[in-house]
Length: 167
Ligand code: S3P
Image (tube, rainbow, N blue to C red; front, side, top):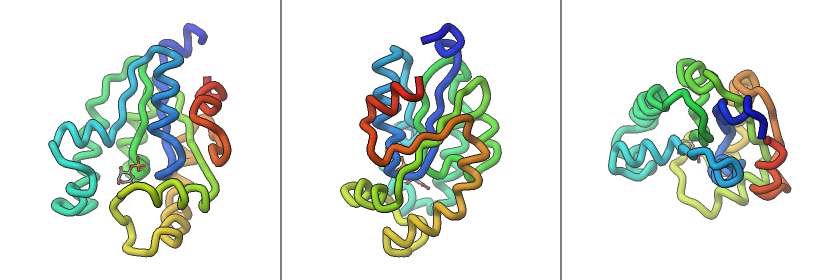
């Protein structure tokens, strides 16, 4: 790990199920840097689970809290895993890119579908899960790409392999 790397933040962006949280944890254990998960910060700040926030405040309410939380992340070194929609707000992208190496994680849509089927995540479109992945990724991919310094496909890599590749 170079001195430059040790001073910079590594920010992971990408859709649900691409490995942002698990690769964030792997990067943190390899580098010894603190790991921050923006969804976790939101749950800690509100005392609610993400699906509950979507239910009570709607997606718009969730995005406001998300922006508030992202704006307050310290700019020093650390590993930051973001929620899949963090790039939707230009101010979030500006904050996340400061002093950071931004890594976009991608995976094949069917791999994403398989991974997120095991978890409970609020619907973003009201569409069936597989259709939703197609719709949302089509809209977000340009935002993800323009925010990223580096892209890796995690369809068939372990969290440890992906972390080593990033470092
Ligand atoms: C969202 C992704 C989720 C969470 C929220 C909204 C999204 O994070 O922030 O449910 O809009 O893609 P993960 O990407 O960690 O699942």
